[in-house]
Image (tube, rainbow, N blue to C red; front, side, top):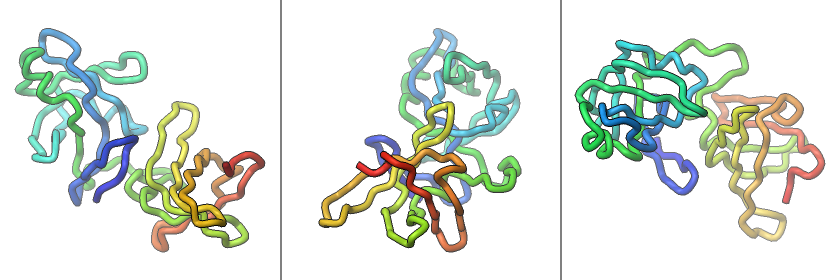
Amino acid sequence: MIYQHRNERVFIPDGYLAIGRITAPHSLQGEVRVELHTDFPERFAEGINVYVGNGLTEMVVEAARPHKQMMLVKLSGITNRTVAETLRGQWIFVHEADAVALEEDTFWVHDIIGMTVQTEAGEKLGVVSDIIFTGANDVYVVQGTDDEGNPREVLLPAIADVVQHVDPEEQLMTVHLLPGLLP
């Protein structure tokens, strides 16, 4: 699956879930800073197998700890800052089979990306192209067109007052537009 994350196209191999993105090396011992793309930071527990980059290089989490809004992670085989630098920008994946069970009305990013969004009245707003992780609540980035056919981007907060129904089988999300949500 390919989805747009900010200005980057991200390839997520079939059967895998993206759980983080390596943003930079952190220490001389080879730790890396990881931007989380999971609500389950325990994914980075010591001893967990992860797969790095499009080549799905298997590595083991040797240690991890929270740092600001990220995680500092020590991966097997990454012994110094120079080697860690080669991982900058790489995505970290886990097998879908190892996924944490989700609560009711909770969905994986790959279930939401590509979903058609419509209003309660049936007006098509577009397709979810990205999810912004703000900490308070996620925000769905919806790419569509306005009434004149011009490109339009709509940012929808992923809150109960806005998202009325999500049907992953039909790839359809129904939303209630609060005042000010449309540009």
